[in-house]
Image 1 (cartoon, helix red, strand yellow):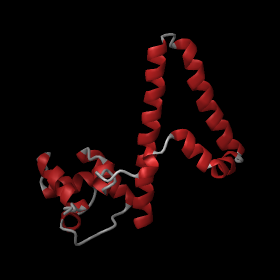
Image 2 (cartoon, one colour):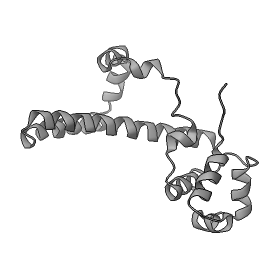
Image 3 (cartoon, rainbow, N blue to C red):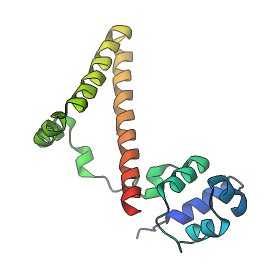
Image 4 (cartoon, one colour):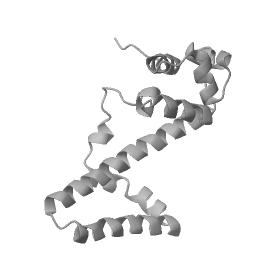
Length: 154
């Protein structure tokens, strides 16, 4: 049995954890206390993206948790090795890289990553650097996918 925690319940719990009153927190994010109460109680849904972003920032809420993206059911496509994913998505990737501005930015990212090999001479540190870049890309991707979900819901 899976217990579903709703958006408003998370906001309320985090607000109370940070010792904000309903009125004070509503002022901080620029909405009425009544509207905040309705969000927390689930009577209002789909707030504007700007409001969600202010709430997330002020309460330091993890967006994956807030949107229910971080769950124990692992997505099989995430487990798929990167090279296999690239092969499966080859046509899609070629289409993306047809855009000259995108191609230029991707090449710049790769160039900078490779140039760092000469700055970070220690092989272990360079491998850690590359792993860090990979983790940051994955984290950023999750964030933007979450923003897209919020925007689509509005």
